[in-house]
Image (cartoon, rainbow, N blue to C red; front, side, top):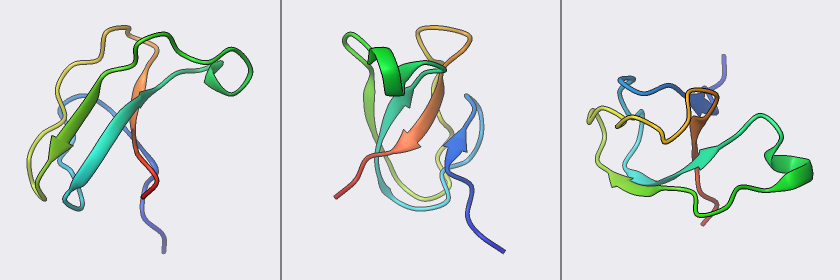
Length: 60
């Protein structure tokens, strides 16, 4: 089994790290000023700035 890659607001962070907002069409259009948060393992994800966005771990 693998680890989830997209997280909803209120989910718990599986690992400590930096997470960024990811949108539905972000691959093609990009996101202007996405939120970036640093979370520790077990902390909950904050609300996103748009209901269609999710949280994704930033690459190292």
